[in-house]
Image (cartoon, rainbow, N blue to C red; front, side):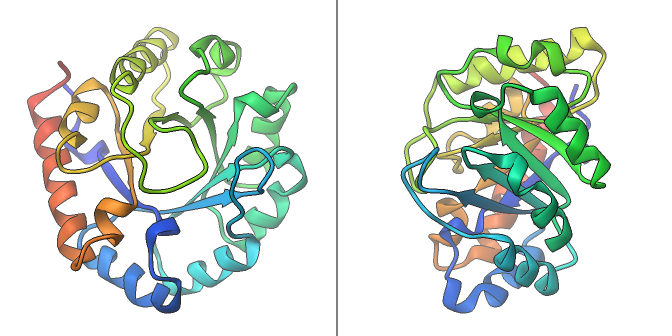
Length: 230
């Protein structure tokens, strides 16, 4: 059974109101958010351009919660230090762009951050098998990255289960994060598959009451964890 204390909700500010970002962050804090998820996109690895270290610095001033920084960029090594200095708690890079993934994960740890590896929907688990001993977080993308508000890809559930098995066999106590299209209708299934860290954007900040939405998702996730893996 998954321990309920291990389940965390990470609202993604990609869907927040940037004119009132402090207000939105405070709302999800009251709703029980455990982390704040920050999607960094370079317009090259993914077809969108979002935020940089300055936004992370601003968010760091607005909240005491850990900052989960997801680097959807072609050359993450160039930016690790800047985001760590800005206040990132977790730095997640994509396996698809890093020929020396082990070296990058070690660099993240030297900066004092937890090290995460993200896998796009079409990327097999073999991409991380040789570095599984270095990872603190495995991020399973349940949409093709680049834009918020996309529909969840159902095949992601079986991939989460396979990551869970890989970590079990390796004796690793790492988090399994899932990002993309998570809402009240599927959060229970991804937790049952093994996810412990849930990213949600539109289903929280796209509602009239982000505080209530965050609380509802957290409660559903904890309830699913209490039932155990399927």
